[in-house]
Amino acid sequence: MGGAVGRWRRPMGGGGGAVGRLEMAAARGDAEEAAAGGESGPSVPAAPGRAQVFATVVDTFLEKLVAAGSYQRFANCYCCFYKLQPEMTRSIYDQFISQLQTSIKEEIQEVKDEGNLEPLFNSLDKIVEEAKNREEPAWRPSGIPEEDICSAMVPYLLKHRAYLQKILKEKEEENRKVAESVLAGRDRIAELQQLIQARKHAWQLFSNLPPPSSEGGSPGTAA
Image (tube, rainbow, N blue to C red; front, side, top):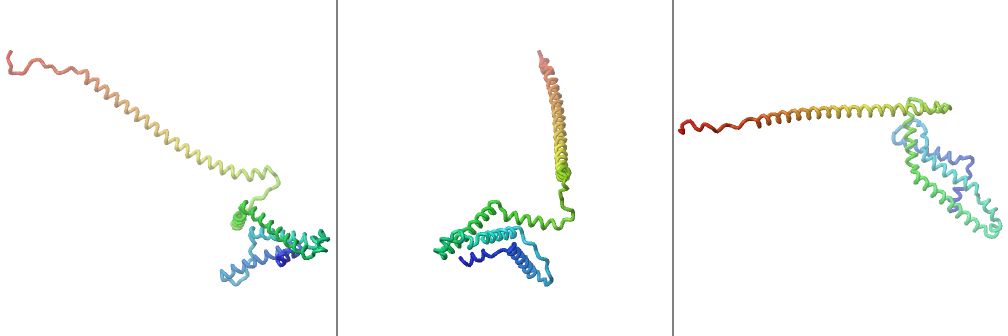
């Protein structure tokens, strides 16, 4: 445990450890890309991802925390006990620092899991990488809220208006087809009504005809 604590207790010197780790990670990524592509020329250092930067910030925080709460300060706070049991004091300090680091890392990991930070970091990296190939300039605030709101809202409102106009045309076309269907149905109903009236009139004429006469008998009979 002492070796691990000693590793955490290295002084930072203004964040040099974090910068060094970032440079080492970038150099390692470049070496892997060069080995995969077979290129021997100089490569541009790749910027570390946001997840890696976040992990480096956490490590830097822990290192500075341990440096701020050094063993010497801990011993000064418990000088009487330190004079009686220096080895026990050292053991208690090492256990305290180890448990503190573990607790902080677990809390940060819980926050990352609950906030789904890892995929979000990767998504931000992807968005930034895709934005590098865009030719149009990125939006920047002008400092005048009215103009900024207009410049940000007008494109959205125009797009929304175009969408509503498209929906309106579709509804108008649907209404036109429905109206044509209704008119065609009315015409069909009128035709059926005329056909019914004609058949009714013909049936009435057929009903008013006199029945055939049975007088006169057959031609060869005598009275």
